[in-house]
Image (cartoon, rainbow, N blue to C red; front, top):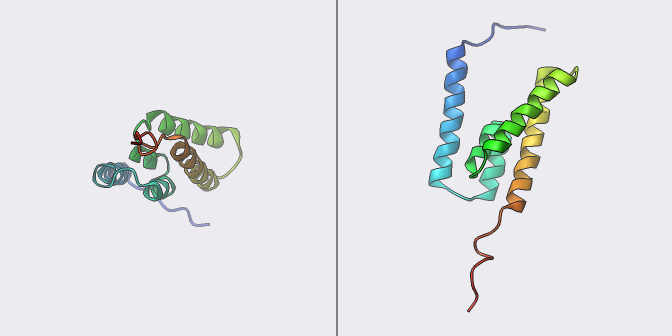
Length: 109
């Protein structure tokens, strides 16, 4: 199997900054869309959770789970990255289901 040279750290830093920029821009321009939140969780992994407010603990939880997968299991890193993507989508689904809807709390007259 071909093992290419790892990318330059500046390229990785720019890619991470671009992902965060896209997620935070969408949070400001198109807030509260459940389908978009799920897409961002799948496409950007833990960084996609920043679309919804209160995401810091979930991002830390996701990275802790990934480190646990890398250290505690003999899986290749690409397999653990796929598992992290699945876990990210499941966690985003749970976050959206437990988030209270503002419309349901509106008083009825």
